[in-house]
Length: 565
Image (cartoon, rainbow, N blue to C red; front, top):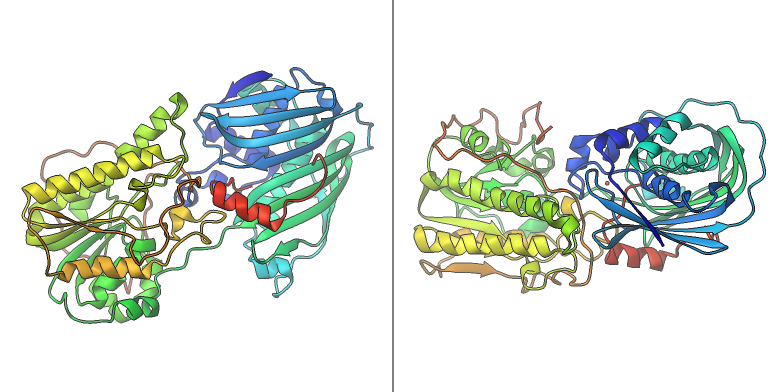
């Protein structure tokens, strides 16, 4: 068995995007990547397979590769150290790209005689610059945007790919292989399914080698409505002769808070009339539901977020005058303090969290784990430190933890450690400050951080959790000096212990100066009329048998860290 090591950088990802035309925002847009479950842009799956095949070329004639099947299990994060292992027999090569022992991509190649030449290149055609945005109905033929059979030509910038391969890992990949893999990346990420595609597997049966542009013809997409699996078959000729099967899932958009659903478990009232409460991380997911719930009880809610909270604004027409945006990076104490309005606070809800990477307990993961734990703690410690001088005696402080503290998922040692630190901070605050401290341990919820294959299927409703958090502000049975814990009783199933949760790099932050900071008046417009401009923080075969829908659902549940394309 041979082993090679490589790292890709953001520049490498941009180079590959330009070479194959796959400019899907998950790979090249920092803001889009930050809002994904991965917390940052990730590398193209096809780039990773290309690099792995280059490592295989050290021991095997790359022209003798007849079939390729790649299964994508985790995202490839720029900057991390990855290993490529190949085990080669006379007729087959098995490859494994891994990070700290966790398989990222699995590859099987059938070996045979050298491929015949397949003819001259096709004429090149322009590539898309903006990815399609398709839904399952479009792919299933149930809408006006139905996608059918398509034909065309496609070419990669092979010299650029060859230079990238040589620089990152050494070795070489034949032009016809680079072209077919490049087409699979481009077509999946830019055309079908497009922007929201999550690549599951790619199977390539090679019939001939060539050079230059390929001519392709796709069949109508096959859609499994239950699992969301999209299977696309295509044939290629000219620059490469091949049959290609690409399987992907469409990542659905997470809906905003549902005012009617929340009202069913938290009837509107004026219990919190006259109170001012800050919600950190309050523009989407659980935070948006809590913000809406607090407003429905009469509170004035300061919603800390990094961009105008359009999702919350759309759901809060009845309470828009009670919801006020505080546009600031909550991990930056200077920025948050400057953005907060003057005046005392009756409570703070700390719900912000960095995206959660899948990490082993291994040397390669130490730095990423340490960054995650620092970022997670900072999103609690920083806002709480800023709010401390403004919180009234008897104010309520809500801190987000997780049921994962009690039953840590397999690849989340850093997450369990970070949440344990949060609960330790809560005990400190309860003992040394005159506030009512509440720790919330929600089960898995469907949010942007868990919006991965299988994520929705194993998630619980948000409204009951949000309602209980809001109710904590009017609780009467509070014991001074003790931490109240809201657990998952009645909320649904806890985190699955054996699953591999949604990943992404954490948000890194600079230290916050400790001195006091100036404040400024309340924003002039409530969330019902959000600011026009907003700013984000700093700145996802061996045999040509496709995966079944059951296999895909199982893959989503077991390894919800899927690579987009």
